[in-house]
Each structure stands twice: as C-alpha cells, then as structure tokens.
Image 1 (cartoon, rainbow, N blue to C red):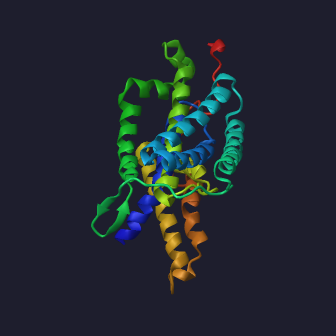
Image 2 (image 1 turned 45 degrees about the horizontal axis):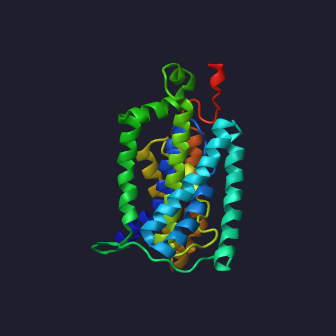
Image 3 (image 1 turned 90 degrees about the vertical axis):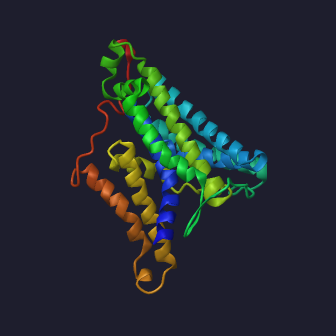
Length: 296
C-alpha cells in the first residue's frame, strides 16, 4: 500500500507541476492548450542539458525551453490576439516536430536520447527512492496559493483574468500580467517535462508526455482553478496511473480489471465537474477573451 502511494505521488508530479502553471495562465485570462508542447520541449532539452552538463543544468534548460515556447504563445495570443486555442494547438505540433528534428540532428535518432544522470534521491522507510522534485512540486502548492492570494502580483494577475477593463482603469498593466501568467505556465510545464525525462525515465523518449499537458488542464478544472484542488486532482490521476500499472501486471482479480477503465475514472469525474453534476466549476470571468486596450 505504501509503495502504491509513492508510485501515485511520482506519477502525479508532472501533472501537478503543469497544472499549477495552468492556474497562473488561466487566472490571468489566457487559455494555454500548448502546455503539452511545452512539456515536450522541456523533456527533450532537459535531457540534453542533463546529458552534457548535469541534472541541475538539465532542469534549467527544460525550464528555459518551456518559457521560450510560452513566449511565442504570449506574443501570438496576447499581443496579436490570435485565437488562444488555435495558438496552443499549433505550438503542440511545432514542439513535436522541432524536438524530433533536433533529436535526429544531435543524436542521429528520432525517438530517444542517451541515458542521462539523475539528481540524488529521497530515501523514505518502506518506499522506493523518490526524486527531490517530488518535494519541490508539493512545496509549490502552498507557494502558489500564497502568491495568488497574498501578494500584489497575484492580485493583479487575478484581476487581469476577472475584469481586465476595471484592472486597466486602476493602473494595472493587464497585458504585462497576462504575459507573466503565460510565461510562468511555460516554466512549470518545462520543469514537468524535465522531471519526466531526467528523473522519471532517465532519458528522453518521444511521446513520453502521453498527453499529460491536457491531463494537467483537466486536473486544474477538476480542482476549480485552485492549487489545493489541483493537487488533489493530480493525486487522483496519479493513483489511477499507479493502479492501472498494477492491473496490467497483476494476477487473479487484478488481471480481471482492464486498466483502461481505471484510467478513465479521473476523466469521467472531470466531465462530471464540467457538467455541474458533482459541483459547478467556476473559471475566471474573462478567460480566453483577448483584451483590447484601445477599447478602454
């Protein structure tokens, strides 16, 4: 049981990190479907940085890659007011193609990189060693809550997503707040991708994100755009992933349960939230709506 809980926690980390990033961008009023692509570039460049310069450099490289792709999304969707969903989907396709091209150019392989060094591990009684990034991800939950609810920056960020016109009239740099939200989400997604490559697998493998960027968005919605709620939803997704792995490798009754059904549970709950069956999800009022300052 303890090992299952540890496995669920490991599986939840990339979803949690990307989900926390999604809170920042959506609270600022910008939808970021491109989280998946930012995780992809973070996983590849994180692995490259770890391979040549060590795991800490890999973390920095992964974060930088996520921020770079997020900057493109911010420029396109905030400055030029392109549809945010279209921009995010395009970035996902760009990330997939760019990392594949870079992998071929650098390693003569399209799908993998050589094995990379990892950070040290946290050794807990009765539990397989955990990555230090697990603790970092958990600490980022109260930090995010504090930033959003107790700081001037968080207040301005939330005001940009709730009522940008009123915020602008009070002197808030609405476009700057939206840029900040998107860039922070890119940093978190890049770190999530780096965790997958450097700490979880030990190398970059094409397709290793497996839609976790979209799962992070679902976790954020299920958590009602709050850090604590996103943590709970991420743990639910992680538990479903851990149980599905045990169902595949189990015998007897465990083998009788198709793992696909176990993995469906978090998505069904998310749909129930969106439909208002479990409870009503309340997104920021102006999320997804481009802001035109000249109309103020």
